[in-house]
Image 1 (cartoon, one colour):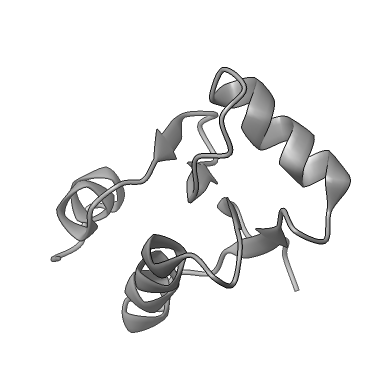
Image 2: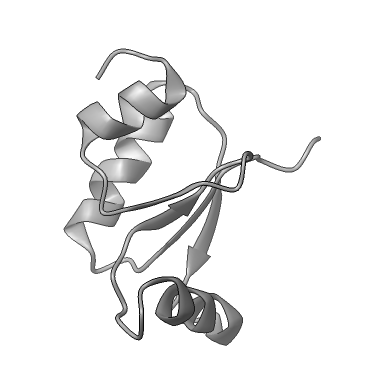
Length: 83
């Protein structure tokens, strides 16, 4: 199986992360989940991208673009699906 083209950095306690997971699942969009509570490299990446803040979800797309705390509408626009 191919590696998902989207990587989402987050934590299980994060309600925005759970919402984004539901969005991807609802639209059958594969993604890789990186729990920054368990993955120190993932946490470092989030801190670097967000100027020292642990702002999640931080989502990286195939084209290299990054969205931080996106709404369902923003995810839908990015991925060309309905919210």
